[in-house]
Length: 125
Picture 1: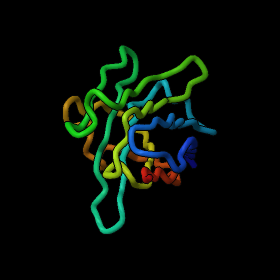
Picture 2: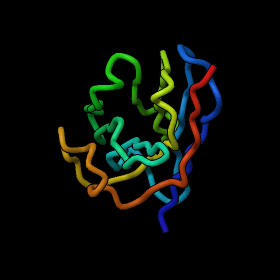
Picture 3: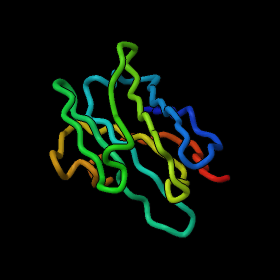
Picture 4: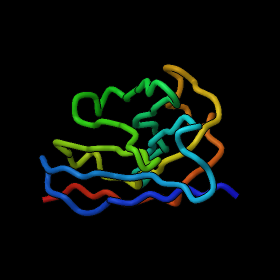
């Protein structure tokens, strides 16, 4: 069974930063497209960002462009660097893996077959 594990969530003040990590125990993440999603209380899950395997093409939802950066490091971890956080960024954040790349449609959760358990991000003063 594929397992993804997110870490790095927490409580931060508006304008602050957090660095989320996504790692896996039974798959090599560099062979998969990886997406970050979030779900706030009472809201539907939404795609935040995704990164292709190989050349690392990235996609962001409009609300995080210029503030969030998705990347891969050399330990087969996918990072979501979140800067200038806003209260509306508060949510549980999930990473997910997909065997196919959806291009600009990679923010659709239906593409993804393996999910982590989520990490809470709270932005509040």
